[in-house]
Length: 267
Image (cartoon, rainbow, N blue to C red; front, side, top):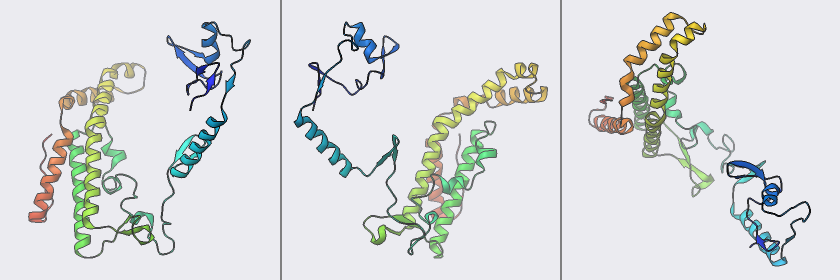
């Protein structure tokens, strides 16, 4: 369907006269842009002619989209579909018992001190890797032991099951845990490492200026410079994600053989 406006095809961006557009780097309105091309919208308003067939097709398209889409638009924002179950009611378990509905990374994050330690730019990447592996190992052990002694009972959403949920299996939980570690490893490699190195460099380069401005003391400035030099080699680290995941896989192998939690990773 096309809307003819003075025998020209209208695009989605040409909606209202006050819509800002960019031409040659300068934001302008549609009216201003047309005026520069010799067409004065104020003196000769654009006439829009929409056929009855086009209106009917547009109505059908809107109706179809409304029926097919489960996403509700509220004030221009997409809202996720409503949960198929009512947590904690009518015999349904609480939301924290659904391992696929937890806040992302909850199994691992609950076992590391993020605010005071993990996100501190002066904590080495080697220590952060160790923290992630330790948290992963503890969660892995809890899942295995919980299913072995019959005390662990978790659930997942399943639209084919009665009530739209069912008990999770040990394998499903371990797969979700492994996925969480993989996401942590990816973030560590792509963002955390770069951010930490950048912050340490900025602190060291501005240490003297901040002392002169009274923002920090001599001791803090000296520490910032020393830490930067000591941890400068971390800027060259590569393949953190692969190394961390290899260590996790090795842990799984050792756990299955010996039942212990041992890690071996070199960063």
